[in-house]
Length: 481
Image (cartoon, rainbow, N blue to C red; front, side, top):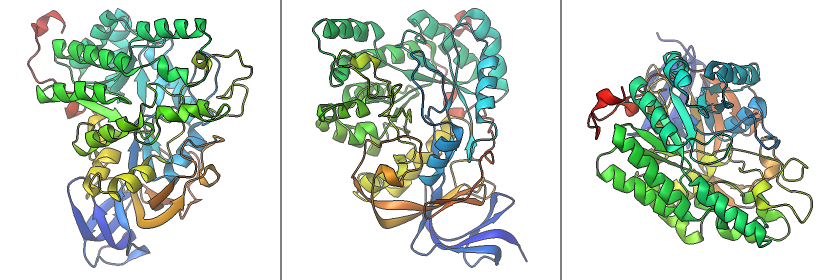
């Protein structure tokens, strides 16, 4: 007779491909059986009326990260991972930030030290690549990929981290050689600087002018340019936090041509809009992020992109700064400019409830698409599948039980992050996570956190199949291999 540590009974089991009813048997932190009327477990959970889905993977979060302007992220790995688990996420992928000239290994070690003993759930790391010099791309990059760091983020804007087009090509060539995934923040830096300077000269410095300084065309142009560079070398890549339908259309055109171009978007582009910058007082600063939210008409276009599978990943891009803090969003003095407002919004805990309520329950996406967008696709793109991102025999028992009819009024008072606001305050949701299991251990039950800080384990990432070239570069690959 089989003996299980835990059996979840009579539940609806949803993966990216199937929805079935049955039981889930868990032993040693992994799923070991799926079926009906499984043998008794040491612990039993009645899943009647609940939906069991793979634990969410938030593949874009910023915790305890260095900044160039002295602003301070309000969530470290403990508070951030706690909020993630409360919202149905069981794996996070934050960033190890490389300063200019810093060896990549030193950057990674620094962020391991920050996560050690703090994370409640499992985690991997992306590496922010701010220096694409020959030594770093030829030695550090190769060694890191071999050690399980297979995704790198590059910026086309922000003076302290942006790469030139030539440096982008060096990074793309290295990614192709090592079969790593490159993530691109696509905005035209010179356009943003030019617009910002002219807005400030005119005294147009309020938070709402953040959106004016970053119109959709700067995202569209950079998206097109990034895709063109990747096409030249035949390198798969992912565009992060896509906000505008025009940028989305560039991705669609690339996908239609057979290019391996992936897209990520975020809840702020589904639920916030440029009208939120018009809120009274300093409230508009709460919504400052880059790229900025667009008009309300843009939101439905992004929903369409999710339902049509143009976007493979929905991440939070959680970058939380306190509002009422001298180093936060609410800048002192009328002379302060929008460009000094820290960029980012909190969202690691609200990502999945928002998507479930307004996506699944409103009929915009299917339950299987919810699983794919929130977990499975990220696991595949970043080399964690099938260990993560699915409910299957042999996979980690990262499972979240959802009450699809639970009604929740979203307020900051019920959230677990260390931020003093949520931009989604007062939104009424239907469907909410009621239990989160990380490797078979219950870490959240009806909003009560029970897992201990530091129980999360670092996850090495494999070279993802998604990063394999198609084999049709526009130039002889011997030139850049």
